[in-house]
Length: 140
Image (cartoon, rainbow, N blue to C red):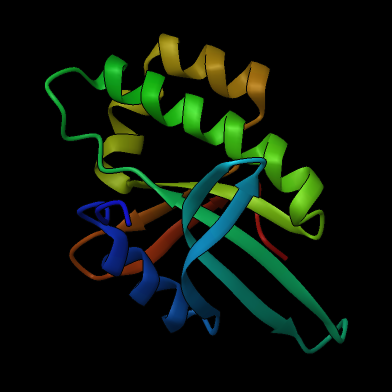
């Protein structure tokens, strides 16, 4: 089993505070390959009476190069998103990043180009208070 990201439990706690039912490691199996997305979560939307389901890949962006961290995160995100369309078509994939990373590195042109062209779904969290600051796009 792969090691948890540094902020895995932080994001899990933040989701639970918002009423999500969270499970660790959403499995993806393709042929001989077994992959794991960090978190799977479900939330009952009382107003619509339907289950909303997401998967969350948590990334810390604490490596020596934030661009290298972005390359790895983007590669995983795109791979998981493609595989989820087949195995979990009712789930949306979100990339979870700290508020400080979003407010600094994610505002740089290199990231803005990727966000605009790839339309990544982001979950922005505060690692100290263990809360979700923002969903992009907003979860309803």
